[in-house]
Length: 119
Image (tube, rainbow, N blue to C red; front, top):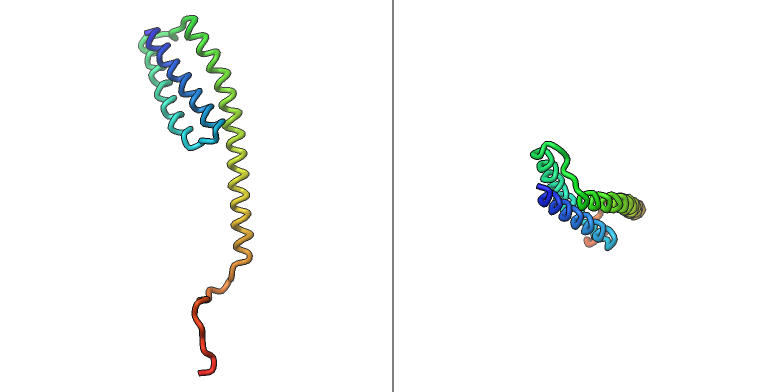
């Protein structure tokens, strides 16, 4: 069971690294899928601990958990920065759309039709 948990934690570590890499490279669309895969790893780890009746731990697992804690902090920081950047982008797009709408014609007139007023 310890080996299974180590394997799952290593997979969790790899997924966390992939999330961080995606955030650094600006590929935010990949993050939700990776987070879902990580949640599957968490569920299987919790299942192993439940089946054992206690929290399975050894030096390797403890070392991986320590490294994961640092990764999680960095992921949280990157996610916050990404959220701020995307929020600013949405705000600027909305502002541009609002400004553009201020200069559009209020009355709908067909611009391609000529009306002869002499007849």
